[in-house]
Length: 202
Image (tube, rainbow, N blue to C red; front, side, top):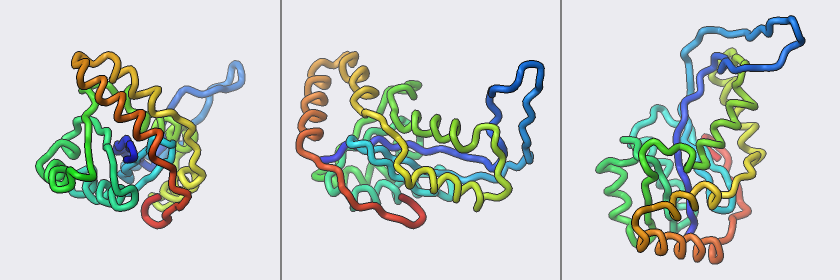
């Protein structure tokens, strides 16, 4: 069984204004276009560090379920780690999990704990490298820039570093032991897939 953390994000074509370096005495200039045009993206990071992405029309349960089905089809047996957003925790997604309970398990992260989600760190790195103080002229230009970055598999993150504090600090010791054992078994038995899918998502 493969452990997968899943999350969604919104990128606009306007510059994501951040602090930056400049010569002493000079005021840095950031070119913006004021546009609200954007793309929504789902991201998933596996236990072995493989990043998958899928563009979504909106951050809604129907789009999220498409992404979940795609990941399920690829990895066959999955433990999904998700936050408690309404597009994750709803009858449609929960219904699919229940229908496939022999090959899908899931856990919800605590409310207001983005530091436990490694995909949030992926989003932070993407903004830092591709959209910070950088405006794009069109959605197509932004999409091309993001995909070229993601297809290089740039993230070097260890899921256990994010999830273990949650597991060890949980109030349910029985749940904690069970999850730690599950993670250990998954890490030992699962193997990363060498294949890479192209198209609307990666």
